[in-house]
Length: 291
Image (tube, rainbow, N blue to C red; front, top):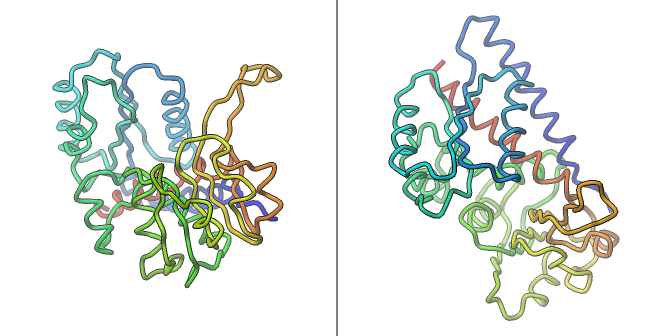
């Protein structure tokens, strides 16, 4: 068993971007600028946004964090997005999800200019991805593909099982893995909570991407020897031995599954860092289209 180390792979990407940004500065050109909108004070969202802002600083991007209270109106959010759409200095816009219930996620996502949609959630971005056209790929699936590429994981002709059908991970992941690219060219089965023969399908898989949000959902009896496993799940579970009172668990029972795998992502330190690296690559690309 070998570890698909997202921290190492993402650092390699960040190092490359840092050099590219330094070159832009030398040439007197514009550096990438990411604007992030954070609503409320959800602990996980705070952590994610702080990581994104810190990474911008680390590689030389400009970043702007715009904060709103939980009771902000949808109208006010849309107004701010429109302002950012028209700001020539802003290359990428992200709105940290989830949003409060009174704000429509879809309305907010659709309001972002597709040319600045570095999270890759806009229907235009998704449509272009499905058609295999140049676009901004959703950050988590993009990060997973970059991770597979970094570790030279063979995907051509392999059977990949994706567990989870969300628009953020599962669906785009199935499109990317089946695309005529490298990594890619997999035969993909997409599974979900209503799949009846999940265990049998997983046992056929050469690659499993678990993105269902249930800790330890994928167990050792569902995995054949030599499988490559990408664990997207990250759930806080109670652990009184930890100072924080909790620990992070993935969708895969790492302890019992890892010995059967050829490669596996850890949680944390696998997919998470790659998501941020992919977001930075998208933002850099947006900036380069203007430079």
